[in-house]
Amino acid sequence: MTVILDRPYSFVPPHRGNLWPSAIQSFRLIEWHLRKREAVVDYELRHADRFADSLAAGLGILLAPNHCRYADPIVLGWLAREVGTHLFAMASWHLFNTNSFEAFALRRMGAFSVNREGNDRQAIETAIDILVTAERPLVLFPEGTTNRTNDLMKPLLEGVSFIARTAAKKRQKANGGKVVMHPVGLKYLCVGDAWKWADDKLRELELELSWQPRQTGTDPQMILQRLYRVSEAYLALKEIEHVGKASAGDLRPRRDQLIQFLLARSEGRYGLATLPEACVRERVRKVRSAVAAAYFAPDPETGKPVDRNPDEYLADSSAADLAQFLLSFPDQYLTPGQITDTRIFETIQRIQEAIYGEAKETMPMKVVIEVDEAIEVPTQRGPRGEPDPLLCRLGDRLGTMIESLSREARDFEHPDTVTPNQ
Image (cartoon, rainbow, N blue to C red):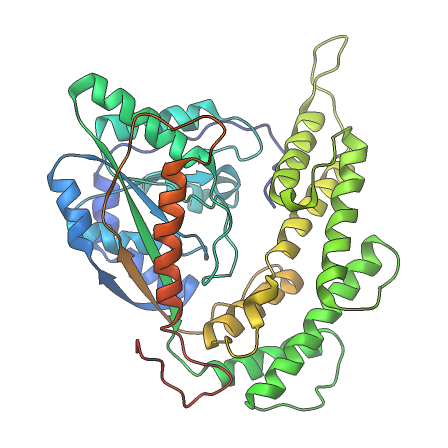
């Protein structure tokens, strides 16, 4: 859940010292954490020299990776170690509110908070200052949020290019220096037997739904049929919970109708204008922002805080989270002929998150970290009313890398097939 209702947002600044991040690197705590919590057991760096060259040139450096897993910020520690630096990274405020240990560790590793539900000037100014001074490279995830679709990217947020351009303008004025952006492609590859894993995890999900599994085994077509059935069961449960009954028909229109119902109900409650269906992410952001603003709004007459029952506000925030979560099941991800072991793995994990509240990170994975050539950040945006050229260039570069990296996964429907890139 993104909106925190036990206290209003307060900015969490980055820890500036080098002792803690150096200790984390020296004692190999990255490996321990990734193996224990995320099942990431190996990594491969590609073109780290491109990053090293920008670092040696004293440039303000923005690393812009795709964002598909919670492990993404941590695996970049391997890249940082390779070139001999530490990183700063912008992270959603809710990550600092899970438990005190994780909040402590996040700051010591260079993270600082951003309020995704509002205009967080402190976070933006901190990011700009990091790039202007070139104190350390800065990690910004241009997709904003994460979901388990490693082979597809969400639309990129303009805040990334705004921060980069503003910093480039200030740095040029201050000392004539430059700011560059390195697109970074992250691809997670299954190391173990994905077919056996899928059979085991689908059996657990079927039992959780009080089903007696009719057919089990590692036959790819049978696994796909079971996966579709579990997905439909989850959607039907959510339709009954929120609408009152399950609908019939294909999954895609049913999913879209439920998203529309969830957001329209909350928008009506907070007096928000309903945006076009294509803008689900923006609608979710506006609902979350409205929930936080309404819950923490003071008494209009006295200006004093009001003790409110959080249940209704939590329900609206959860509905927005569910709408965004449902949107993370892309239609084309399980297209026949394009299904890989990692796509099955990610889809099952999304269902695990929906039913259990968290994914079960038990499939050993290797992450490929590929650094693209530096993009020099211009100080001007380009013609008004036209697409942001810097954001377009970043999107094209990242998209090309992700498409290429996606072909390194194993064909799920034909287990004996080896792709040319392997």
